[in-house]
Length: 146
Image 1 (cartoon, rainbow, N blue to C red):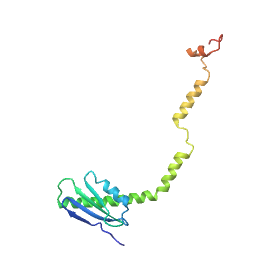
Image 2: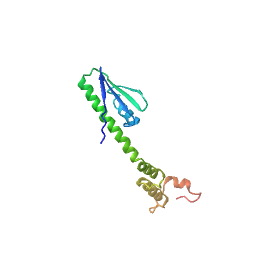
Image 3: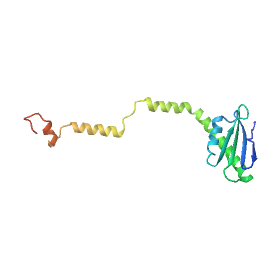
Image 4: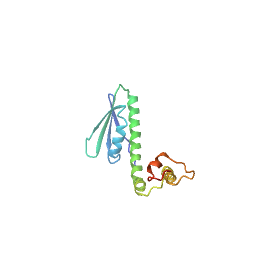
């Protein structure tokens, strides 16, 4: 089994990664970097083809232990983003099927639609108690009041 360690370099308040896009897709790198925007300054560079340099600079003073923790958290989030992309790609056809079914299938009548149709049907029936309604007189032809 081949292993790849995500190496990093520490500088004053900064952790710097050199990431290979063959191992970590660009969308995963961007996704991980985005989640750190609120905690530190994020800088992305392209030092070479298929390489992305990510620099995370602490907004406030940070000692070496805090920077190493930040590096570990970024590495974990990078793996999380890779996994999310792979799951998204592997389930894409299922999601497309469900969306197509939701948009293009004949929907069942909802309970609300059924109740509204029932109320409409009741309003159209004759009243068995023959209770006059005020607008019935106005709608009746002349000489046939209620």
